[in-house]
Amino acid sequence: MKSQSAFVKFRKDYLSKWRLYLFLLVPIIYIILFAYAPMVGAQIAFRDYDFTLGIWGSEWVGFENFAKFFRYHDFGKILWNTLSVSLYSLIASFPLPIILALILHSFPGKRYTKVVQTVLYMPHFISVVVMIGMIMQLFNPLSGVFGLAYQAVTGSIMPDIFANPGAFSHIYVWSGIWQGLGWGSIIYMAALSGVDMELHESAQIDGASRFQRVLHIDLPAILPTASIMLIMNAGGIMNIGFEKVLLLQNDLNRSRSEVISTYVYKVGLMSGGDFSYATAVGLFNSVINFALLIIVNYVTKRLGETSLW
Image (cartoon, rainbow, N blue to C red):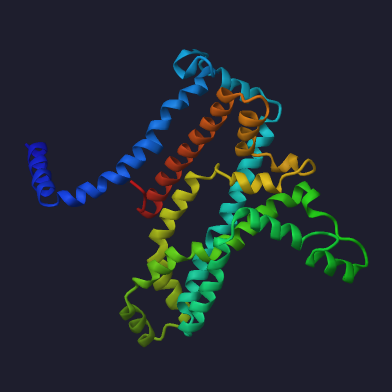
């Protein structure tokens, strides 16, 4: 009876708002075509794919491609590089947009705040290729700004940080923070705009300082948003920016810069085009992301009662 009444209610709602449901078809069709339909091709990971035979005609080999990746001599190094850079990026970049949003929201000069916001948003619109070119120019040991400053202070040529494997993760993470800090604070600024100003007025009457109001009013107001963002970021923790890593990568830093996404590109398109093997590695990456999403969502729900589902 409940299911029948729910169906009747939906039917009445659909008949009265059918135009809105018609608009809803556009994103649904888009998701089906570009998110679910390509999943059929994921079976390549379990086949010895032959281009002439097609997906369905290729031999089924089960988990052989996955086992091949696990037996690969650099499997541990690639997995560690991916996880270490991702965790470093998450730990370093996640709290900074929250802090920036709290500072901008607390600043009394609203005109000055808008100028600061505009300046901080601008790096987001710089393409990855241009940004890497800027970084390489700035840190060029012979002609870059930092290279010339190093020579002026020490009298010697600055070491090439792009040839230092240990510097790769720092360049990757902090250039990403510089580019995305302002843009990442937008959602928290939006959450802070919904805070009732009467709470601040009451706290001021009670003698609360500005820092105390930020700590006990503004911060709790954006914690649900922060929790959702943390879950979503954790769900993509294995998805390191492919283009950026590839542009920063060279033969000297490859031991620390080879991650799953660049490895998939190389085995899938560069070295003979082993599509089955590349698909298996990519599918393994997606399964790890999905597992992390489930775990972080469960932990966040138990701790703060905020989750995606």
